[in-house]
Image (cartoon, rainbow, N blue to C red; front, side):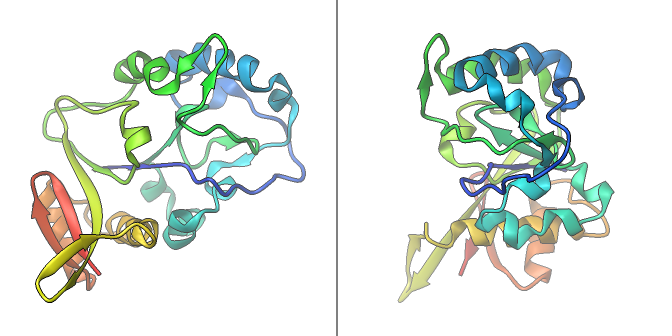
Length: 217
């Protein structure tokens, strides 16, 4: 199982520490050149800014509920974080504070989803039968979708009098909670049914619908 997370708009500002080492980031060989291009277009000074673990820099609702720094190293290795600036990174990659919305267009770069799509298709794992649990928003999903692996998106709904409505205000919290449960499982789920069973055993009301794990809150 692999868990794909979005980044968070809320980010901590590392107050000290060495700057980013681009060669140490995940998939440096495949994504390094594009990261360099984006840094040049966005703010070259980010190369000199203090960096910290991505698991500590991202502090939005999903990450607060997931408590990524407290998960075992084995669980963190099952996580990739999408980013408009870095493509994807791992929780233990060191990054500076930055701001780059996924729909922003930079001079010489163009739409970021289109910019990243070919490099991510080459870099990211896409194995027949592998379960990829997708917590990303649509803007980040547009950057990469597997063609062979099994993709399971997580959605949140409320239900009243038989009527079901998608929720947005608490969807990030729900995804963080579900991600934590799946990553803490003694045995990682191998398929959507396994993921649904783990979530259900943890107390969530869930349904599988057309490639989605729907959580009823």
